[in-house]
Length: 301
Ligand code: NAP
Image (cartoon, rainbow, N blue to C red; front, side, top):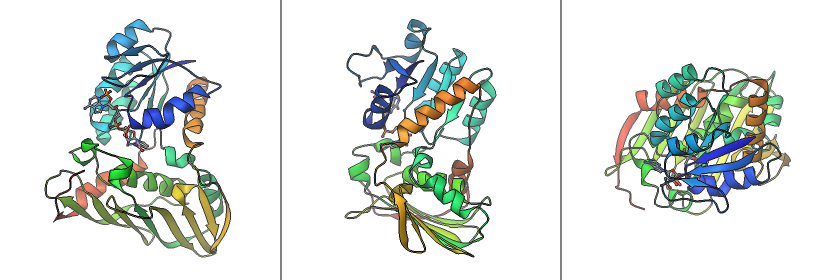
């Protein structure tokens, strides 16, 4: 099946293009980007021009930041093509609901790449039937290393530290046996920015989260949970698993996440199905609704 990629930036070049080049299901047939190109693949500056020139492209994958994504998503669905969305699936929940209503007769896949990490399914299986008594998420990374110069992340709609933090919430909402909800939040807003650079969350089931974009030195992408029958820890963004403090499985690599997303997209298209789970984004929206704001030091890249 032929697919087009829109927004040839960091994640497109790091993950989507290599995943598509090796995919048994997909051929990368076109790209849309104002500046990015993939050698050997026809590139367009405008999505409508690409859709008109490539009626044979059945699916489009959007790697744009969330704010400019909706207009492109609408254009894809209006043209009757299948649509795959990077996380978070939109800038707002109502936007994604609108896309769901438009996606009639085509597949809509709101991806969560961290759910494809090696040990997420094993963690979900281990937790099934256990009662979660409490836990903690530590998601601390260096924005300057992972998002160099990406000012959009700290603008309105960029979600700030929730851009990586939503990955932790996507794992949490996939592995817990019972749904979780937000009870309190504290957001640290740099004086010169619109989105939080750090956040602390209190969730139901005794779970707390510490999200920080200013982590120099060792980076942390950990979820620790206590249950009525042992403890579980996911490290390295869901790729390593520990049960009762002992490593059991895993591979310290995220390179299988995007191939798995494209395999899932192919399966959805073949089944005529869609997959849109907004649970992680609901928690983020609730943190923006309920969270107390602290103004902190200005941040510049
Ligand atoms: P990025 O490199 O800053 O942006 C991706 C592309 O989007 C850019 O190359 C740019 O292409 C286009 N773009 C940016 N702003 C735009 C605007 N206002 N209007 C139209 N096009 C615009 O961002 P990224 O890191 O790849 O992230 C994109 C998405 O992937 C985000 O939702 C992010 O959460 C997700 N993601 C990122 C990572 C990561 O490690 N970076 C990991 C997983 C998921 P042109 O300027 O060439 O048009």
